[in-house]
Length: 153
Image 1: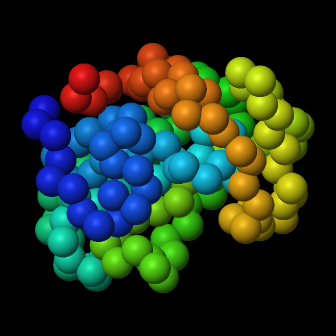
Image 2: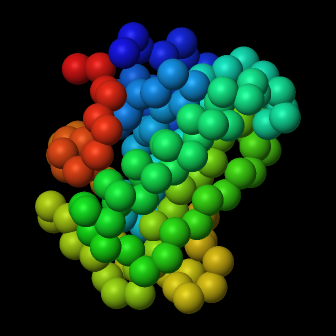
């Protein structure tokens, strides 16, 4: 698959360095700020600023992407719940913050990741520091779990 046409929203979340999986209408990025371990961004590859402005094919494909996200995250680290948040306040194109929720602390590389909002809503204002190296390793770890990997390498 060809690399997606970057949107301002994708770039705001670190594209292309944070790209995990690429689809025709969507891409999955590692969220640079990690409120919980393996938090993602599901970003539309469209310049529209309205969710309703996406074509029907994007909505059909979204079902596949969401299934892949959940399979990959479960294979990487079984989560207890998962939250999809469409906020679109600062970043204009359609995107979701995908926040896996854990009742117990998670460890990855040298980091420790608690879910300070558990069992309530996620706390997006809390971010666990993640080094560039740990971020790169997390991307590779998630790609290895991806059921229909379509990344550009």
